[in-house]
Length: 274
Image 1 (cartoon, rainbow, N blue to C red):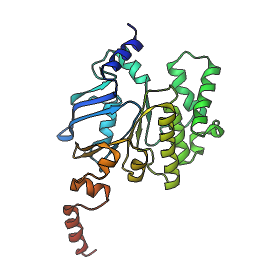
Image 2: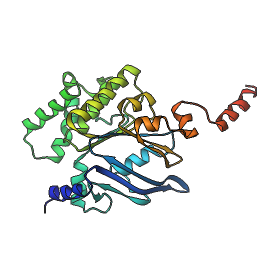
Image 3: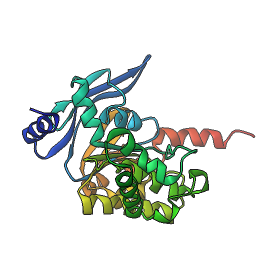
Image 4: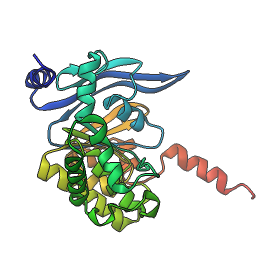
């Protein structure tokens, strides 16, 4: 049985779930970052990970996409344990995964076209003309074909985000992970990136996992949401159900309210002389 067939058999074991995290826990030194995370990401959905700074969102993302083994627990992709898979199977699964980093992580010495072509050159045996044609097609999909010959330093923030997305989908992945895709963007540009994520999801069926603290963006794009608080799952479910969760701490986060403890701290500060 070859690798593709192996993955297909694994996928058939749990047809609705592409990725599952089971009892994920992570400790850095004496600090517990994640504590017993259980969740499943379904095929073809936009799954949003939210929570305040320091709650473990980015650490969870690294576990799910295979960049960082957890201290305890397992990550299953198409039914296969990501961190016990053979090197060959692990490489095959990684090639079915796209990553769009917060800052874009484009190579500054390469043109936008060459950045998008790089995964194709490194991981396929396609002829050069096919590599370039495919890279141009991906840029066209994100509305950046006109910028193909520019260096990343010549791009606006929103254009760099879109170029990073084009590179993330260069190998036609089953799933793409985004780390704060709207961070640092003005509201209009952020909305353009949101629309692009939704379009790629709906048109091509790519599963999207988006880490964000941008509340308008999360509500606009999400099918389902998980909210992390103190390294644990505080809420998980369809967008509207999570958005109206009665948990006071979730209400504070979604409505951008200070908690009672933070409010007391602000009251004390307000009485101090500067």
